[in-house]
Length: 151
Image (cartoon, rainbow, N blue to C red; front, side, top):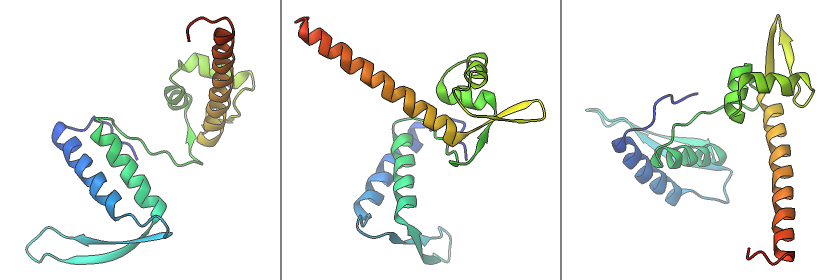
């Protein structure tokens, strides 16, 4: 699912209020949440439904991002992405991503002449490089403190 447009100011305001309201009803210890849906028509038809708590938390996260003016994209963990989609997620150029794929940094498969990258593999790569970056930054901070550089 993709929300291609940034939310309007009105949508962001509504999303902020909605996320807070839903969060206030969240029963954290329960694996299932019961909510009521009310159809906004003449009949005022309503229905109670049970949804997984994790799904409700995801809805709260989506509304929170919308409230901050961000567009939201949901990607199933087992989805296969094009090289352009994968490059966009990593915020790199497509040729750079193709280089990572060909160097064996990220697994991929070919469908005809096209490369496909599993989202999970992309996420694993991103987590790995983020961990490496944090380690290097920690080392730089420690070195700066040893040299009394005022950090």
